Image 1 (tube, rainbow, N blue to C red):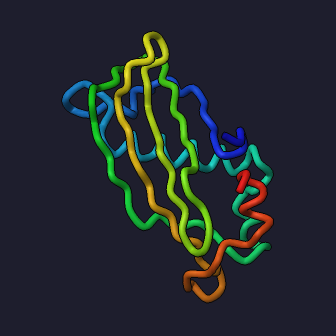
Image 2: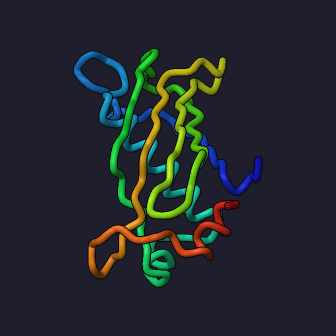
Length: 136
């Protein structure tokens, strides 16, 4: 596996992440997943501005999220993403959120992305430079 296809980082659960039930809100996990995808792009030299220059930006088509266990205030989490498929107008990522102390899987999500021309707003094939940056 090409290391450019994967990325992960730690997140500390903040008070604003907690819902009325006392654990991380479901929507916050989605933010964690989007944040790790953005950080991944930055790491491989493809911030949004560069993608716009190349004529293609990623847009989420679908998230399928499975919640296994809850995260609590103050916990350290390891959030990771891996691009499983990329080519043409689509890409697929697998994402995980694990508690850092014991690596217990809390959330997993599969995300389907579509490459879109930022000017026309229409799907387009992913430019070769973008695919190469992510190890494809």
